[in-house]
Length: 351
Image 1 (cartoon, rainbow, N blue to C red):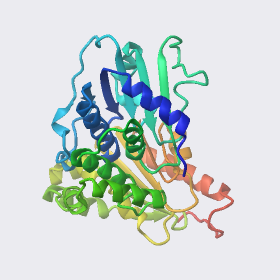
Image 2: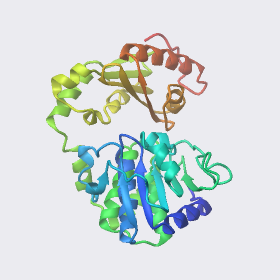
Image 3: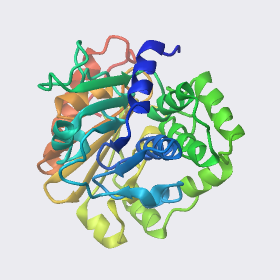
């Protein structure tokens, strides 16, 4: 794909003109969110800017090896210093930053949105943020790119700033994780070209992969063993479903972060088009992750339940019992699959 050079330049110029910046991302940040925040944040620090890296939630254990991770804070100055630029990464809605998001957006003098999820026109057609007519607002939202970290790389290159090994380690992690180790359908030749460039500038693929995928705590594997016992296929084999309960967390002594990418185990079944992972950490509070392989847009379903995401990867959080949410979701998926004209042309039973 080609860069939107005009929009890219506007965003890069807005960042370069800023002296005080707060970089943030969505709640429960993944490798792309943290890698993007750290990669761009380190470039800004190297360029002499005053930067705060803020996340509502603490960084997950597998990502703590990333250079600069110790600078990420869960605390914010209140009020913000005058002239602050708020850079929102890997989401385009202040509400997804957490409870502090809307207040951050109100207090910031300038807002910059860098994201690759389905386009949310945060800044509006006239370049102004919602209900903030005097606020400077810039966005680079590119749903066809594989990772927000790729957009951050373009911004750094546009500004002519150096790519250090620390910056490259973070951006490589962003790309690696959001392409599913270059397995997802969003993986393009550009993903490999960018990864190669980052390796040439100091990212070390083996070390990064070892930290991310070969250093799991035993408790995660104990939890996974329990979760896999819940595996079932529904709707004519098109939907694979697994779930985790509060009791499983208690038995395994695992943490919520230990469930990262569990949904992939349901997705890897040959007949399954849609994988569903229901996660109930506390009774009555359920989060759902969905993945699809080929034709099904899980983001549309997630949006109906108050969430969002990509065509092939989406999710939502809601209140209720896991059983109620499971049944409502399966009912909606069954109807949607029957309505899908470009899906598998075979009879969809109750499964």
